[in-house]
Image (cartoon, rainbow, N blue to C red; front, side, top):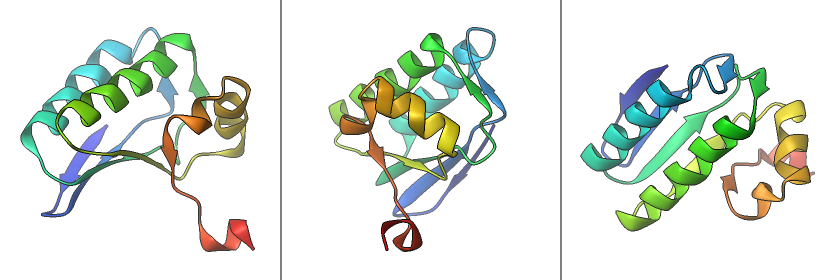
Length: 105
């Protein structure tokens, strides 16, 4: 996971797994990024292959923390398989998922 920042947003790249084994480290890095930056916190999920309930909890917790510090959590590059999980759990209605113009057309 890498954190890249700029004045209007920070981008955090998530690796291939967001599960019980990786969630503690990811949660800590997301909280530090939220507490230290400004603007949107963009999670690049383009490499994410697997997420479990613990990983979904990390996303929800980061979303809540972002709201508490007047920021917005944005999911970018969500693979179709992960998007289906977000839809089934209805988290796509809670979390802000960036949609490309080509996907809308």
